[in-house]
Structure formats: C-alpha cells, structure tokens
Length: 97
Image 1 (cartoon, rainbow, N blue to C red):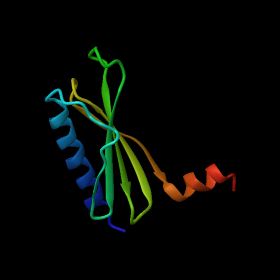
Image 2: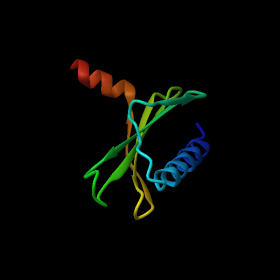
Image 3: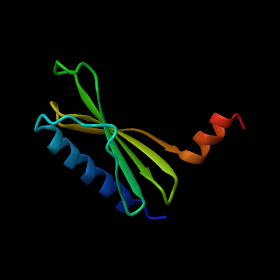
Image 4: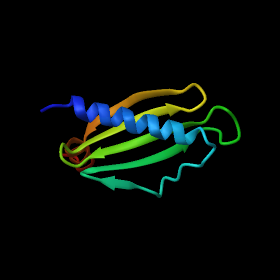
C-alpha cells in the first residue's frame, strides 16, 4: 500500500488548517468535512483567551479504517502527528474483545 500520497495529503491539509487558523477564526468541532473517503474535523483546545491554545485535526481514512490526530500550534507554526490508530482495533477494545 502506497502511503506517501496519503501522508502528503495529510500534511497539505494540516498546513491549510494552520494557515486558516492564523486568521483568528474559531474551529468548530461540530463541522466535519468529508470527501473521497476522508473525514476531517478540527478542535481548538487549551486556554481560549491566551496564547496557549492549539488545534487538533482529526482525520479518518475510510478505506484503511485509520484515525490520525495531528497537533497544530498556530503561534509557533507547528504541525505534528499525535497518534495513528486503527479504528477496528479501537472498536474491538471498546467492546472488550
């Protein structure tokens, strides 16, 4: 499975989110964008009135059933992968199997 294209897309999307987040717009977790087997949502975390806020990008790849969470710090212009999880494993764990 070729993951280079997937990673490139994820970093491009993350960069776009950081660019938009720098415009002092609030990210709404209730708004989810979906296209071509990918679903994305952003969540702003931390102290909303200070400079210690950060954004999380939740990206779900329907084809590989993968959840990827990216950390974005708008002030320091950082985008890091926080976790990559297989959704099947998460649901199995939740069911106790």
